[in-house]
Amino acid sequence: MNWASSIRSSLKLATLLLLLGYALLLGVFLVIGSKLVAPNRARQARQALTAHWFAGLARVLSLRITVHGAPSDTPALIVANHISWLDIVALNSVLPLRFIAKAEVANWPLIGWLARQCETLFLRRGQGTSSKQLCDDIVVSLQNGDRVVLFPEGTTSNGVRPRRFHPRLFQAALNTDRPVQPVAIRYPDRDGDGRGMNPLAPFVDEDTLLRHLLALLKAESLCIELFFMAPITATGTRTALCQATANAIRAAIDHAESGVKCPEITPENPACPST
Image (tube, rainbow, N blue to C red; front, side, top):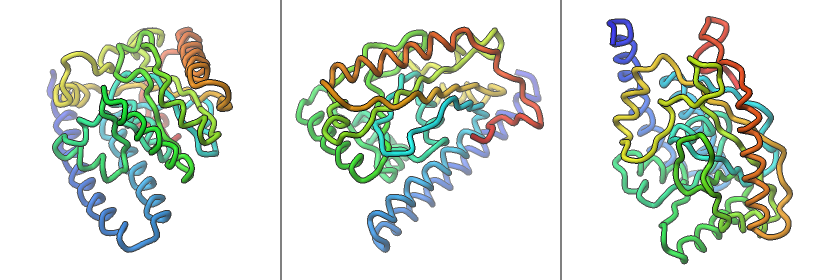
């Protein structure tokens, strides 16, 4: 690593530490604010501040986020393929969302506390009652006007092809008559023709958050493409709804593999363009 990239990494790390400190202040503010204002206003403020913070994190990490299509303008179950923890950063920097995470995240130092303040919904794997409770929580959230993000693979993949989608939590969309909006996520290889996967993106196997984060800080930038597809009406069975969503996401990824090379960074085209 040359001196220029070393300085860039150090500056990114320093900014990231400041951003984490800012997150703690926001978290305290949300805790206090939730006791002083009406629940609906507290929820709206929480989601807006969370999206604001994640947009800042995207800039620190030099994420180049390109949005195709448009998010649903009504409450919906947002369903996406899952490649990395960066999926959450990219999606939440574009619009306010509620996420579903594995229960272990709630116990992570600092991150777990922040996730709880952002009203993340948690799932304990292997417990049928937990899935039922989570489905009920998603129903309430959708009824309250939230957009809830579901990664139905249950874990991250290498990004080449999505894993099998699990249908159980699609029941929440059927129970509320809310649409399902498929979102395909890609990390095109900036050094190639845009068709391959950037090897820096996947967060899989034995990789750790710290090691992955340090690698990102050393990188000049990372391209992320979000393809928001037409919402699917919630009808039929949860298995059929799940399959239709999976087909839409896989088709979008296949189509995008004809890809265009990610543009270079210029003053007119900054590292985290406005979406």
